[in-house]
Amino acid sequence: MGVLSNKISREELKPGDHIYSWRQAYIYAHHGIFIGDGKVIHFTRGGGLEIGSGTVLDRFLVSSSPHSPDNPCPVCGDQSFGDGVICSCLDCFLGGGDLYIFEYGVTPMFFLAKARGGTCTLASSDLSEVVLHRASFLLQNGFGMYNIFKNNCEDFAIYCKTGLLVYTTLSVGRSGQAASFLAATSAIVSSPLRYLTTSCSGLALVGVGTYCVSRLVSDIGVRRDVVKIPVEELVARASSSNAPEEATLTAKEQ
Image (cartoon, rainbow, N blue to C red; front, side, top):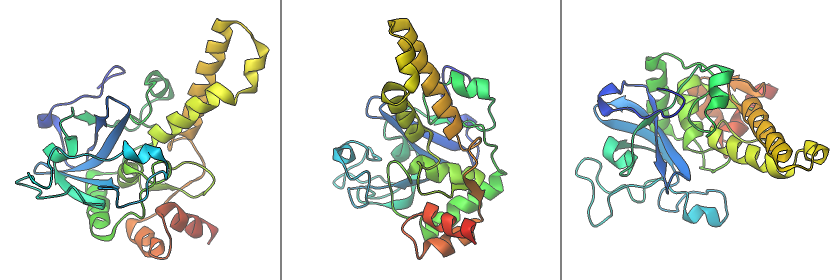
């Protein structure tokens, strides 16, 4: 593991690891929890059956599988129309991509050095047996409706590892990828500091600074609008809500 790459080999995997694989020429990554025996539990919109962003992006941001209905995986069967929390073999999860591990408990300097979001967090991981329990419980009971910005595969994996959920409905979820997207947008159009300089180098410095600060304060290990909630309580409260964060908001208010 290092600043340049989180790539690992299959032999290095341990049950409870949060893993991911890049999709669509590194535009985004798909995340899941490795549970051992070559299996991964992950959260997907799958086959267009669940709600994503509600935009044209949904044509591209889909958790993929190397197998088609005409050529189902001999291990998983046909999962081309699977949605919600599913369990797949490692090959189907990777979709032909490389294997990477998500890092927990990193320092702020290391976090900022990893310019691409969705690869690490300052938050600490819980014990592997707790992580596996959460993932298995959600496999049986679901994790709400998929949403690219507020309830995606990275949000699912981070919750399994930490038990943390955002309790405000006014911001993005736990996903570092979503936070990076919004940080980049903020760096381009939102910072008032851009009026303090007209030089290209000055504008670049302001943009990079705004991007880094926005990413850092949005990290699940830094932000204060989070609460730790047992998975059983989450599922019980989510049964009357559309997404886990709504159930968590209710828990916080009580």
